[in-house]
Image (cartoon, rainbow, N blue to C red; front, side):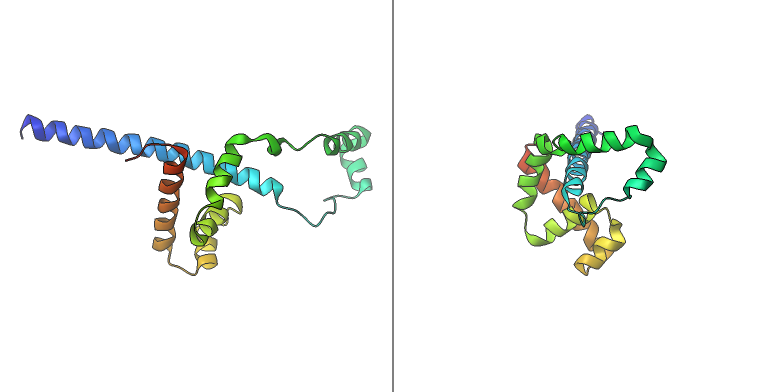
Length: 144
């Protein structure tokens, strides 16, 4: 084996590791975005427990804390990193948007994502890979 072949193989392995780390960083950003989006999804508008239930479980201080927490602005409104990813996801085509929301916001897993898209598991993972690469390119994670 020549030195050039060995050097080329080592360079390919380094590029592959670099891409994996970059994609892991993009995956982490998408998970942050998914948490941010999930907190913004509206519920039915009713509390999860009655005032009596809160009093029994949390005491008077727990009820006071829940009232104060409603007066403070939600923490996700100022998350610029998640908002940046949200702008990128908004620009995706419909199929990749469904993959992004299913995998990162709703966290339905591959089975639920396949059901939402009506596709095979292999196609779902290819779409997920396409999503990661597209978002990486738009956020400036040079993977080329």
